[in-house]
Image (cartoon, rainbow over all chains, first blue to last red; front, top):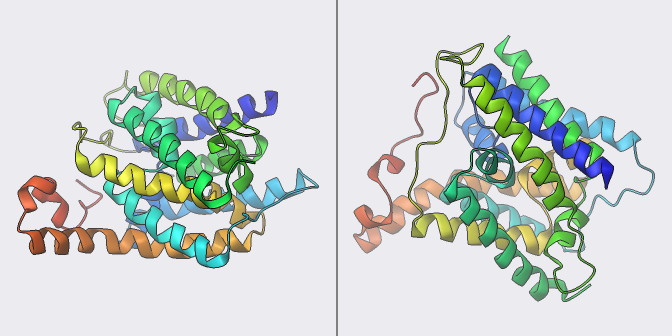
Length: 131
Length: 161
């Protein structure tokens, strides 16, 4: 678990750097959305690229990675569209609400995270049952 | 400098997910598997990440502005409304059902994940159709004022705002 705590803190530092440096919230969904609007502020593209590069490095750290879900491709595609719509409606996703919103003690984010867990648990139950 | 800061921030955030091994769908599926072999890693990580960010934000706000910009850009919405809950429910269903979320997916793509790539592609679609769908829905139901504040029909605020 120690690596989980350390990793979490590191992610928090990353979000903190974005805030201290640019005053921006590290919400991946929001950053991705704004990038798609044809943003002239390159920091967004750079942030997204940074995350992908981190993934490139992360691959080296583990031997038994399971990068895929147990869901079909159709399910993943559906999930993406639904998640995109949901993220726009809720003005955020797991990083925005779970790290930054929680860190700001935002009541909205607390509600969102609770809903994620409850609905997420139900959805997982429906998709794959108890594992 | 802004661009470099953005890159470093993304790299650090992604590295955090990497170190915590939270870029596999199993981490999301594990945290919602409350009736089975529950894996609370994602929650533990958030419990570490959120206060870390919170402290850094508090310190940053001692200044009048961030290092490289003229103002802080905190979210402004405060209301817990239907739109928020419905959005969270939709996202949560996709999250728990498929085991992906935007941040995880990006790191996963970097690690070579093809499903994650498909997710990101459809995520892009979802992000782009959401606002037009909302606008259409409001027009059809004639209910625009109640669904959400009007500002959301306009294009997103320009970054220099």
